[in-house]
Amino acid sequence: MVVERASQQARVLVASNRGPVSYSTADDGSLTVKRGGGGLVSGLSAIAAGGSGTEKDADAVWVCAALGDGDRQAARRRSDGRLDPSDTGGQSVRMLDIPAETFSAAYNGIANSVLWFVHHMLYQTPLEPSFDADFEEQWAAYKLYNAAFAQALAEDAAHGASVMVQDYHLTLVPGLLRAYRPDLRIGHFSHTPWAPPDYYRMLPDAVAEEVLRGILGADRAAFLTERWAQAFADCCVRVLGARTGRNEATQEIEVVLEGRTTRLGVHGLGADAEFLRERAGRDDVEERIGMLRKQIGSGPDGQPRRALVRVDRTELSKNIVRGLHAYRRLLEDRPEWRERVVHLALAYPSRQDLAVYRDYMTEVSRVADEINSTYGTDSWTPVVLFLKDDFARSLAAYRLADVALVNPIRDGMNLVAKEVPVVSDDGCALVLSREAGAYAELGDDSIVVNPYDIADTSRALHEALTMERHTRAERTKRLSTAATALPPTRWFLDQLEALRAVTP
Ligand code: G6P
Image (tube, rainbow, N blue to C red):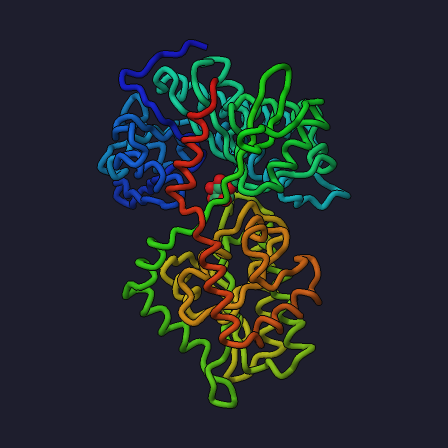
């Protein structure tokens, strides 16, 4: 590969599939831009504002993929794929115009249908996965897509720069980039869980190896919890025969393979209290609280009904269907709750290119309808389902929730569990799956469930609904403290500092 150095070189680079902005095309052909949030956005803004002490605005660049047609048009405006800074809030963003078929095979075919499934243990194994010729083609596309990122980063990085590669979409990038540019400090961050070795080894052997070797190309590979870092280390031992130990100074796990050491870091991303509290206090949220309260209504005793809330992307791992079954079981086993509770389920569309996600969404609606037709009355709708993404409504639901249900079958962290306690008006009981990364920090003050166990989840819902007000308020305070221990900006800067402390 020929690496052509960009004229302006960056000292800090972030690479992720989804970038900080997305474009859509209006009917008249014009482009509208939408800006996203999250830990990477706030971390990079902190650098731009001089937060890390050494960087200036122009020293950071974010490399991402064009996801749809609007993005592609925007990426093609300039030959180097740089976006107009007025669209990005001044941030330097390079959007890669990877051919649509290659992108789709890599993103839908490998990242979301294989790697995501492996790490969240989502396969129904009697029939899947089945790695055949289609998979081989998609895997080839995934390699091309990773190579496009590695090339762009190699071009844009200044000598000795720090590169922070994100997630399961880009597992091969650290290894490829190290081969082009051994001078760089390379970090990789997994936002997902990591599968235990027996499950991980479902992947074809060569692929299982390539993914691990790709990430081990980094100086530091970081995870959301110790549990996922340990699982990654276990896979390196079992699949690659690597050695592991602990760094004496930092206590971080180290993986040694063929004489090179990769440190494993743990950075448990927290909620952004300042942003959430400000945003949750705005008029549009107040307005939605009014609307939701009307829908919740009052029970036969004239008291406002309890609100059981969940907010998720409609994602297979979020376990929305079993959550509904547990709620049905509650209404069945404990008729005293009928007419006295409403389940607000905010389930926003996600990854709708994949049939299995569309089917899952249909199943969520079907089960909700079934519960409503079995138990509903003229004055009471047991489940109110919202299928359209509306952030202000999510915040409104967080604020008024009596109980929040977060029951994923597996989740890297789960920020909903962390966000609810931060904005809750009167305290909220949290029912939390022990398989969510957030369990490590929030388990003590939650009602913990085995997400596969409907009876257990139903019992937990009853316990949460009957929790004394003052207990609930005290627990919410402690949950909120734990949830905000590592705010997004600090989360990002800690990783950057740790990466810089590594000798390449
Ligand atoms: C998870 C992943 C992220 C991803 C997000 C949304 O949190 O770890 O990398 O951006 O899901 O998924 P999407 O496929 O819509 O980008």
